[in-house]
Length: 375
Length: 253
Image (cartoon, rainbow over all chains, first blue to last red; front, side, top):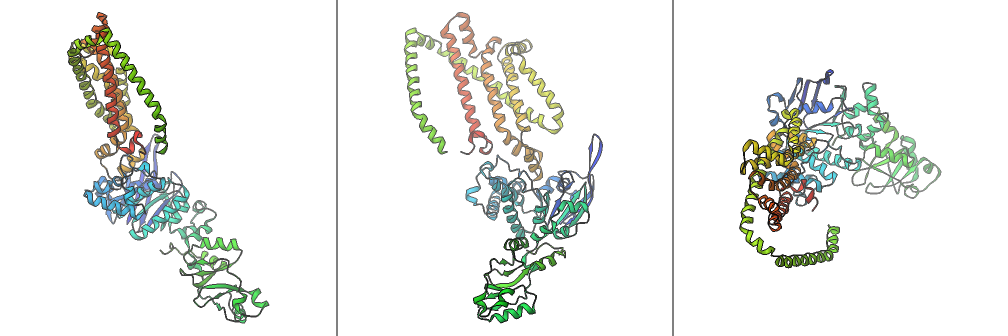
């Protein structure tokens, strides 16, 4: 847990004092990622750098796990806080193994333990230890360097991590891959992370909580969904962007919006049964399923009213389906692409478990869930 | 890799031709040397050549060694934060030292310290100092800021940053300074004779004074050879001692 109390930093310049960080109060709960977000010069990086004393606060307190960080020697403090920076900062004179082992060796771990830890971390990011341990940073691709930069910050297994735009030095495609990898890793390691970013999409993707900074103050501190749903003022609304509702779709999964009381018909059922369902429930279509629950097509109103026979023979093909864990943005995008207003939802083994319609999605968006999607 | 070996193969016939040419030239030179009595003269001077070469090496070795011993720490010192505001002025002073002609430095050394071996050492030392100080200073300043930030942020002390980050990452540039200093030093060392420092300059200047080509060559050729050999040796040191990741010569091999 990281807690900032009335944290302030005033820089002395030729034109007098400039307050970069102005009485900040902030708490990052254990095991969560808090993104400090804002335009450049808003004080977010200064705030982070005060946590590991790269910048000395003018006033205010910083607590890590309820211990006042003033009581530590800065060097000792930094060794117990993982630190990853935008330019990665791998030491070009050291091999990958030596780079990963910097903090462990500063902490006095023996060679063997450092070596094993480096192997373990490389495996965690799917880089073959035997191939990479002895390479130098300039022999790695940008994405590989970025991964090493992140696992180097994890090397000593510090409970708290500071990340200053750690995925900034990389192309957008690789960035998304590494972000996903990192989130998967975080599910296991549950570090308390302070993460600086200037990119709202990254913040929404990575953050359990987001603190938006302006001119040294926190304008709003909330979960991503709440921030997007209820920006407290004009500045926040502008900053998160006019498409904030669409951004929220990324935060929700299909299962959050879907209807599970879907009524279906078997292939052998008469079309009459489908017609009854369409009339009695609000369903826009009736999925046709086989014996094991896999969808084989659907019946819509037009088919049901104009014909007779077995449902299986009359069913229209389902042009697409979504999985329960897909994000809603994907689902909506597919629905637009196929010009439909509902679609069947399948579980991981492909069985029908419900359906989701546009109405369900807009209903979901009208409420802030206040929580990031469950892992 | 593939292109490099292809280039080597293509160059091989050219190399062989070159080697034959060199062998032929050496043979011609040998024949001429024998006919003109040069070999006899050189044999006569051989004990002098050996003694003076040794003295020459001592002059170069000691003055260069002392320049390293003083230059690198001075260069490092100038990069420390509390020295930053003075460092440019200090470098200016050392720079000015470099603009004084070699002979004048030696003459000044003589007028203050007298004649002999140690005044010569002093003159050569002063002369080798600048490239070492300047390259150490600039090499360390050129270490990227984000490496320093990473080092501090991970909890290295000032001393650990110097030894593990700043020096290794500027080593290539520092070595370039050592190499320049050595080249200047070897080239200047013959002048030490003029203030009684000995060395191969003794054969060169005496040869000139007596108009004896053989004697002059007996000094000049070893001086030239020494320069080439020492430069080769320090080149090898630079190649093997500078960590692979920061050595442009060994990049991606």
